[in-house]
Image (cartoon, rainbow over all chains, first blue to last red; front, side, top):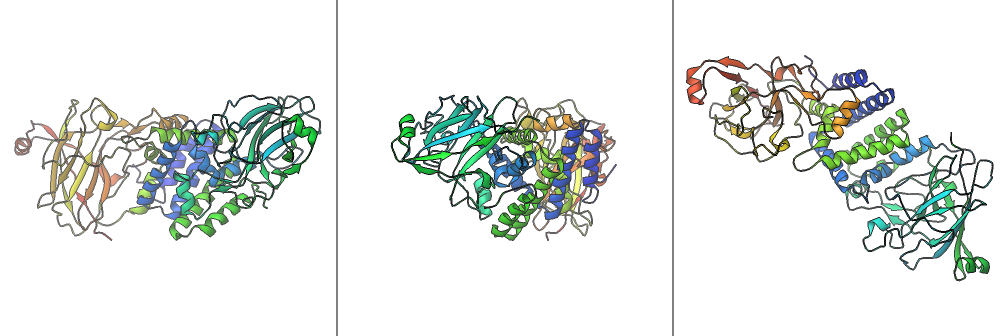
Length: 289
Length: 289
């Protein structure tokens, strides 16, 4: 029988998984994971106490996850892993709008709303803003009937699912583009906010001397038959955290420039008083591969 | 502001953590972790679907952990990580007995028992066995009053904490060595058993074509003032799984040779009928560093 040592263990474990795992893709993933995980442990010469702290950290991260909170996604986010996966799968280029991270607060099944509706169910004295845009394909032609899943924090810096005092689906909605590819909705202009710091990700950020702030943004998932789904944000120009996003998710092409508007026709159409805040942000989808 | 790409993201994340994390040891650990984790993601070009499956796998692993079960330790075990940490922290050599993994089923606070007592609270028709040994220091001198924390599976292949039909602390006990450094207890000879396969570790093992069996063993944590604590197993000679332990924890020096005994004096002392099964396994502790 074999004795396991620092020198031979990784090779033996890799041989065991590599020789037995039949699915070629899973074989590649599990052997690469073992190789890098062992290299990490060897590089830092992890102590037993540190190993046990890591076990407890992962356990607590799991226990923090429930149907409304995903601390492992947030951990992936603050380590830059989510953004790396995004960058690998959505290289820049072409007419498509750039993507960014999903984040831990997406909720399926937000209500479908009429074009131009307001997603404000509970107001926080924020800047009432009209968001408009056009969804186009790689030739610049409008895409009718594209679906936009929209979500953002409310004026207290929380998503609805983080705040029991907020109505469900506050600051969330699902919209469709019209025949010309246009969409519009009314919201409060988002503010910078802190990711949750009351669990393991907060411990990591504090231990690392990093702030927990994200620049203000609205989340979008834009999808249409025959096109690749786009998961992205629209950030706000001049936000003080654009250069230090806690989750490394900013891209200059995703910065939207909110303007003050005195357009009386628009104000009347969307039931706003002038002046109001207005953002036009168009997005492009790429055809499915 | 910076745009993040596959090419620059890892460097930016490392600079962020590396420049801000003040504790030098934590700085080394977090930057090495990020470096290896990003390299893994880049090596396999992880897809978004795979990333999400990994998030769900980790979440389910966390949800499987409770006060009686530690699926993250078991995951670390089956990936060879626990054994690697053990090998790094306890290099072979000297008069000390070799260590091996703690495993996920250690429970603090097992009952202190008299020398020679039986840890069988619920019998399973196993081979009733007398386990004896001597604890010595690096000069071979006996260590009196050393504490031995002992645990093993019962004859149904389960630890007490896995089986609601088993009394608490079945097959567990805490013993002390006498003035000559000797300890003894009565048990049923352990059998090979399967690690739990009803959660994520089972999914991983099945996807990898690996069996879930561990060779039979008794766990020990041996400690005494002035000595390094020893976490180890005693395996059973000739076990069919000694060469394919699901958690890579075997060492040839830790194999104990159970014998049939007709020693009438021992039988009378420990209230056994002859012939009985007998194991003598001595262990050495190293002085604290």
